[in-house]
Structure formats: C-alpha cells, structure tokens
Length: 136
Image (cartoon, rainbow, N blue to C red; front, top):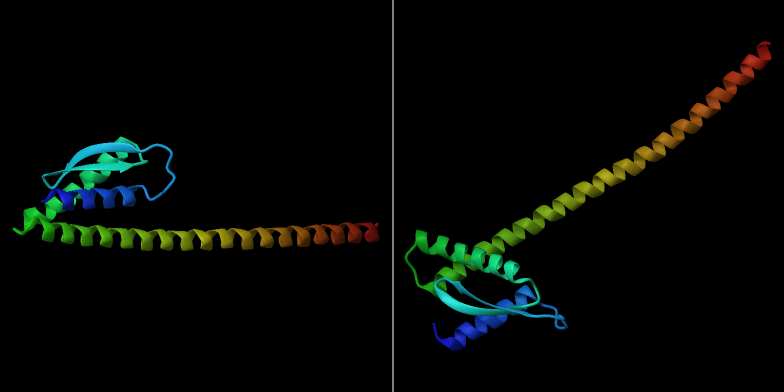
C-alpha cells in the first residue's frame, strides 16, 4: 500500500479515535493492521489505541480468512461488519434506555400510588378512631 494512502488512513483513524480538536496530550502509537504499519496519533491511552487496532485487524483477518480478496475489499467488508455491529449496539442501547425509562416511570407511578394509599390508610385510621370515640 503506498505511503500516501497509509498516511491518509492513519490520519483518519486518529481523528475517529480522538475527534476532540483541543486534546491536551496526544499519544503516538505505531502498530500493524492487516500486515501494514500505521502510526496513530490520539488522545486516548496507548493500550486503548492498541485494543482498537487489534479489533480492526481481527475483523479484517476474519474477512480475508473466509474469502480470498484484495486487502482494500477486505477492509471495506470489515468496515461494513463494524458499522453493522455499531448500529446494532446503538439500537440495543436505545432499547435498554427505553426499557430503563419505562422502569423509572413505573417506579414514579408506584410511589404516587403508595403515597395515595398511605393517605387513604391515614384517613381510615382517623375514621376508625372517631367511631371508637363515638361508641364510648
């Protein structure tokens, strides 16, 4: 792969991993993805950058192990697989958020119901006491 393409890819990965423009400290990490060396510059810790790169590398290797194809095609298919995972994860997170919101709404409704029942219980006790006084 020509160095110009590798530099563009490394620059893109650096922006994706660390999109903040004013990151105080940048880590420069050289690593291998799909047999190619890349230098990633990002604010995240080196071990995080390496985990991301290892994950991307494993996705590309999974595609190339199943099919003989040029690296660029494998990278595109791996990117599609990663995007699919991301979309499904985002959908699952949204479903969990909605489920949690439902639980919190239930809790609020039940608290109101408990308070209403406590007030009703207090009124019934007061009536009972009044009846007891009347019977005396």
